[in-house]
Amino acid sequence: MSNGNGSNVKKELLEDALSWLRIVFSVLLFMLILINFVVVNAVVHHFSMENTLSDGDRIISFRLAYLFREPARYDIVVFDRAMDDVLYIKRVIGTPGDEVRIADGNVYVNNSLTRKDFVSGESFGSFGPVLVPKGHFFVLGDNRSNSIDSRHWPEVFISGGQIHGRAVLRYFPRIRIIFFK
Image 1 (cartoon, helix red, strand yellow):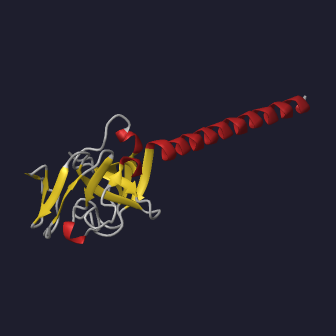
Image 2: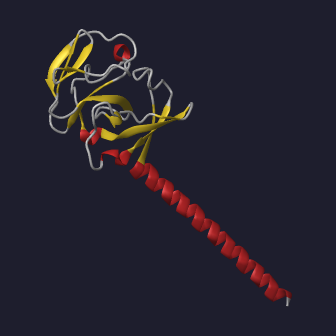
Image 3: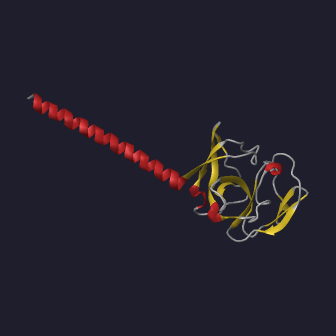
């Protein structure tokens, strides 16, 4: 009789172990799908997005944000540049077909002055005008006096294919929604 009872205990332990393995496998599969197809984890490097984001902030970017629409002016996007493996975080200023120019530190899109409520520090200098080509975007850091961005890059524009997602949440050092419109 003890042999049959021991066999039931072993069977139950095996079933419990298999159940836990299924749970662990399901969680790992879910995380793999989430990280590769839904969100991008990025770290802010330098001070180009001050005061919106700071050096060392960790953010989550939503990959599916542009599944049915293109990035819009003032969206904060995470993207790469073909020349390196770094993820950049900047604000979209010019969208396809826009004419962008900077005069005396003021940014104009289609001859209209852009918003400044998120800009940190003094802006200076002139640039352009440039016409944003189809499928491309003109991006600037919020800290205009301390940002290497579309004004400084030889390729000027980033393509839609370089954009990994829209920044939506800062989770370190403090949680804050950064979805901005």
